[in-house]
Image 1 (cartoon, rainbow, N blue to C red):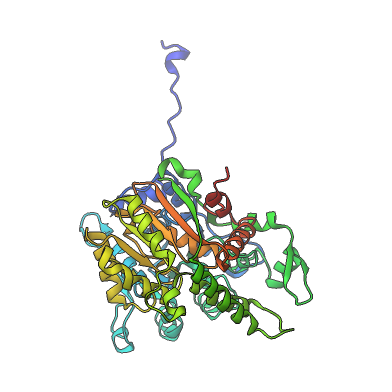
Image 2: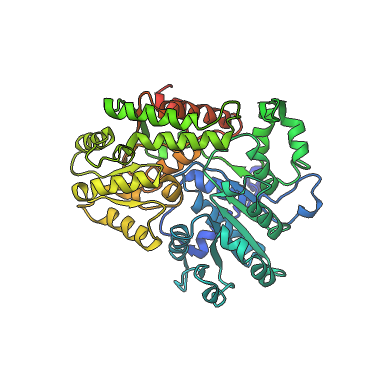
Length: 505
């Protein structure tokens, strides 16, 4: 006879079900493991089906995801795991990946995706790099696992792509999705139409530039949050000036919460134990007296070109800023005297001496003319190479490869609009940056710094920002901080630039 104690059997433990990450890793091999926070986001978003109010056409279609993780936290790897899970478990046949730059980002995505292999066969993912002239594009394989192309070609070949995928379960992945913020833009409209009723992912580590940017992202990631833009304005616009420009916002806490729907926002400071640190240092300096005099003369003349009584709008203000800032570094051009040596070259020499011969330096300049001048002055001395607007796609790749692999090439020039997004590989050989001409918006500066401060970087990144006293750079720097603070009231930045650069706790 058995006792009650002997009869007792503990309940069987509930089976541990495989997570989306487990399922993907059981089928595919990757070049590296994800960090804990990345795995968590894969598992959270990959099964988070869209369920939004007032949006019946979007119900039950699968997932939308906004990967708003800061640059360098590995959102591409998170999004790829997400995409593969939806393919193997939820019937997505193909993913169309849109990128802003065909020159660097299409090949870069291709290399990354092909590094992922099917376990068992060892075959890589099938990737179509949708580039080239029309005759070549007509013969590309649109039935690949991933089709990678630029936003411009997506608009240009919209009809062909629509006809091919009209009755196919295809999903969309928008890299550098700040391109889609403006809901009135043609690229936003094309993306919205093509992927209506289909799954979509948005990737951008760029904090929004202003609160109304959030509407375009919410419309794609959290459909139904706002009925339309008028509804958005009624809820969030508090006051306008006499020119109908918004001067005060309201309910930004509500907007911030709406931005979190179906989205992730991994901040570097929140996962700092898994990532290297970054340090910002402002370098304030004076121009040579003759240079300062020329700067003041030319800047004043440019300002006087705006007639009395004419409103200085965003376009004219931006043109003035651009004209004035170019004088700061490119003294020989504006003085029409090749013998003039700007203080910026001395700053570069000082930084190169400081970091020592064993390290490399990335120098950031906003304008093509400045990059051309700096390259002419630094090519022989430091083996400098450059990535800016006038450099061909092939030469950009050659320059990137040389900087990464040639010890004699110690300096690379980066134009933010040409290299501020998508360029990868610098982090393996460089942790030092000097910004001579900052872009006018905070997100582009953040993206540029993220070329070094990203996965694979093993050293603390040191970013020096040169600010010429008594020039437009001082005002631009203040505006950059003010704009970043406003944007961060809706969507937090990787670290508020004001705190980071000025060293506030």
